[in-house]
Image (cartoon, rainbow over all chains, first blue to last red; front, side):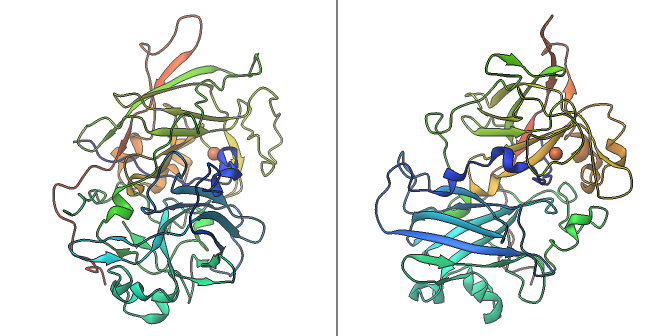
Length: 173
Length: 238
Ligand SMILES: [Fe+2]
């Protein structure tokens, strides 16, 4: 039986496959409830991670010819990523559970030998209290690391700490 | 609606650890808390589909605007399958690499080696119905880095693969057979299992080699298979 190929770091020069327009999931003409997802990635010293590739995937609204449901954003000199997309909708969990609206977020960077995976939920969404993944995180402070907060207009921010006291909850998928 | 079929967990020892002290950049970037195991839902089992109309293929990066790049032209071909040997069709494969002199066409690469105006170093293809892909490129040079004294990366091509779900996403590196730098490279050696490391090394194949044109290398990629066994219960590691 073959075994899955080992991961290796994306390294510092992945910019050769960086296409900034991929961070705009509305570029093919999708319409609906639009939003911005942004955030800052910092390391164990609190310094910005300026060479990360951040990818998002959302199972709803469904991907189509005009909506890729997938985006890739580099981080800038301040460690910030930024996506334009449609606001995610609730999606089925296992059994009869519903999952609160969320993005899957994957981070690649120099110094990461394999991807870090997390999720971005929306602070204040009533469905969060019964979300099967958020409910696995007992510590409310840790749970909060997966909640994007409203910054006004249609902008939501979820900062990501790779290491340290307020480290983001990462997922083993 | 029935639950989606999850992907299998990785086989122990076949993937690197986040905390790898021999690779200095991991020091401040590896999480200290254990990742939370979650069951796969549609968020993990579905993933992006890329159509060549939006993401045009770039299968031959050995030439640019009619000019040939400097260096040893090579063909890199392989099959992308899952852990059950099933081909992964119509999936996007991205590559990027240094030029023949070991220099990336990237502002952050300050290695004192020449750039090549006819080599961008980035390609993109889609697998066919049988999971096969093929690039034409040039053999990348080794390059120094500052991880430790006199550190050099072995010749390598970066690979980005997607597969059927967001949980099959894979970024890896392809190496070349017989490279003396492999034994010294902390990134290659971060994979504990020797067999898993060896599968990162492409094979030279005379059958893929085109007479009077280019050497052929085979690099097969395996993405996670669908789970025959149910995943461990959520939160088990806590
Ligand atoms: Fe590299």
